[in-house]
Length: 261
Image 1 (spheres, rainbow, N blue to C red):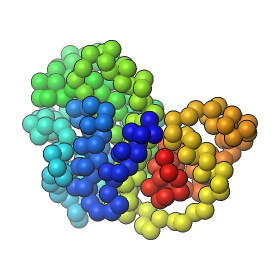
Image 2 (cartoon, rainbow, N blue to C red; image 1 turned 90 degrees about the vertical axis):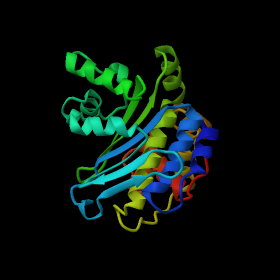
Image 3 (tube, one colour; image 1 turned 135 degrees about the vertical axis):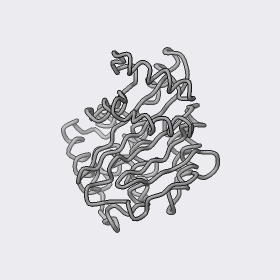
Image 4 (spheres, rainbow, N blue to C red; image 1 turned 45 degrees about the vertical axis):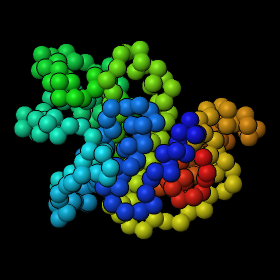
């Protein structure tokens, strides 16, 4: 896991624009052998509106396109044919993936979704016909002021192949989603100039070990502390970094140079 995350971090632009995140999308697709990567910020916060900068364009390299519209922002690799069809048919009203992610705080494997109506099944068939993979994994990302985004990994493969990928990489995907979202927040200057917190050595240690794929029990054993003490360090680091959760704290700590993975 650490090797893959290191390779991805090398592709994240230090600064710049949404277009440059195409390099990150390419790297994610290459490293995990995916068909599509989709980031969709449905809202970047009630007080943050993008109407004055609405528009879109191509992502760098061969990575698809990005689109701003009112308070939402998307960077995705889905075929334009499907995106156009989705909008024209107003599929947002019946999209089971969007509905499930909107209700959940946990990642949604598309196999967990009830494709239980003719409209939903027809929706999925049409998506596959337009080049969308039959397998998907959507990670909801929530924040203050009504902030909500979804990060989706998509691939066409058998159920067994997909289950192996999720079993091996679910932790990676959670970190990647938060890395990507954090970079969007920085590019869009959602929180203005970031604060300059100070993490203790022990707080850095626990975040680095979590990022390396160790369980909380393994981290506690390595540092010879109880899991309750570990939780105190993690909560303290998350609070100092103003992170939404522990994967988000790892993302912030890494991008700001507090830890090396």
